[in-house]
Image: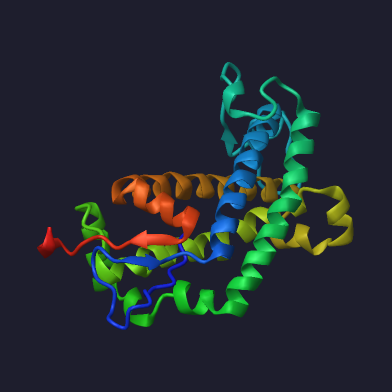
Amino acid sequence: MSDPVGASVDPQPPRGGDLVRRHRWPTRLWHWLNAGTLAVMLMSGLMIFNAHPRLYWGEYGANPDPAWLDLWGDDGIPFPGWITIPSDYNLSDARLWHFGFAWVLVGLSAAYGLWSLLSGHLRRDLAPRLGELAPAHLAHEVASHARLQFPTGAAAARYNSLQKLAYCAVLLGLLPLVILTGMTMSPALDAAFPVLLDLFGGRQSARSLHFLAAGGLVAFFLIHIAMVLLAGPVNEVRSMLTGWYRLPREREER
């Protein structure tokens, strides 16, 4: 995720071609650590899902019960070993990987969320302004992205409305949901916080929501990678490594 700092040291506003400081170090550090953590959790989670590839609503769910999702059926092929941790079927090892990195995810999310709140990043850079939520404005941005017309000049140093909505959906929606539903599936945490079962309507409902939230994170990742490739991967990746970003030149200058 980007974290636009927004301006160079020159008193003149930045223009296309200028090198500006775009990402603060907490965002860069969190971005890469979070990406690695989620990759391990996804791959180990797929191995766990292979053990019982069915999803239910409510408190209970087992082979004889009707499932709202039966991914493989009787003759289906599970997720292949090249995308799971471990690569060979081993449910106990997969749980160790998954639960171990779950606490890393909790710590990273809590630290970054607190920093975003205290530093003003959430209010200043992520929260959409009222005008940015206007249907006409959103429709214009969707159309521009569909035509691959991305922001240029000084506008490229800031989030656009679609980025703000997507990042808020991840930070304030999908990540908390995947963490809380994961906690609900733990018998030990259920005993300590029984309200979790009431909140999500049972352990099997929490498992279904956990799967859907993880799917939402995967969808965000794929769209994020596509946008990076289309916007210029060298400039985008360099800015997430060093913090420095070269503003794309305005279209009339090209």
